[in-house]
Length: 503
Image (cartoon, rainbow, N blue to C red; front, side):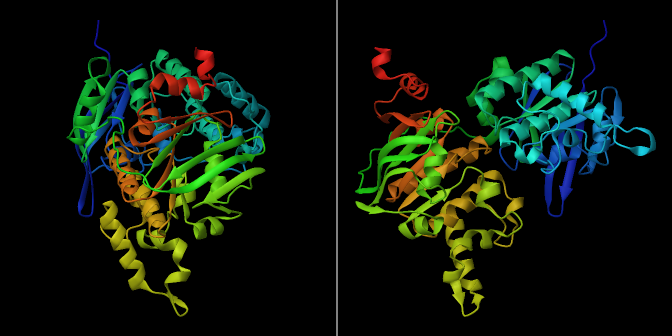
């Protein structure tokens, strides 16, 4: 019996840019029917490697072997024609086109004289959508879909070709728990057909649930491959960042100040009802719950993006009305949004301009913005937050996810808020940068900020919070201190199970 050949093999891949060696002699293989995790901190070289594999970049050295044939990819369509399919984290869809047109973009079936064969197109698309068990059809306009459903359209693209290898890049970042189950079923179906899968994710629980092996990049170099069943999170983390992390629960006991923000009986239609809580200076209050529990909508109300239908908001004991973000900022409330790229940053602008965007009017010297004042603010928060960038002129789109998040946080800290709301602070960020963001949140609380953290990750909430508000279907189920909360009690609360029902 002959030994099985890899579905995909990378040999000695090296890629340099002016002054930077992004990849240095990277080699690893993915077997048919294997789910192979690729892990590394932001900036480790994963994205560059995938762009080489997808034909966007040409390597300076090394080769790519698909099946038993060496492959040279000069563009993404050529990569796809050789059986290499990408499911990108960043959506690349045409919102005004239908689901079918997006899935078969560039490859629409044709009739005589070049006319699009719409009947065939819709039939093929609906067959794929049936496999994914989604609630929309081929004719649906993509722009009318939720972000999670748009991600499912991206996944559907992988099922249109005879794939040798499929690369999933943070595929669950925008998916609900139910949609994750469907995704994992799709992956299981692909592996049963002998497709090799590269799975890129920062979510350790997913990695250990569905992968067979884990390859790690650090500083552009291949650091090794581990058998998933024979390793653990600590070993993978150390291979990724070269050090151990403190992943314990929050155990800080610094003295808390006065109540900075109090919410009484706040409601917003059917999104959430009768929500009450308070946040003290020096305190981190974590909001935890399933997707749709109403956590983000509460933050948007506090920041003036939604009008409440009932309830009261108090700042320093005084009732306030917040009808716009301008009102919120004036009252000392800042929001670091869940979608940092779409809502928190202007990717085509440099670091300095992103950092000072909310206060441009305050920095004007006559009709012009004072460059010196802007640079001084950027330098102050670059040092304070340890933002790693060559300088203020660097475009924000070129920063790692962790450094982009620090730019957003720095932008709002420069406004000197009383209350800082951080929604999903480490989504799409590697484990090393996560630790830095967690430490930053704790440091901000120690400096007297009142901080609200909204997160879908239980370890994160437990690690940073002094108190945790558990929500279920738009209502507060329970509020825990860091001393009294347990994982079981937290899971029960966000599942709608009250203490009396447990008893």
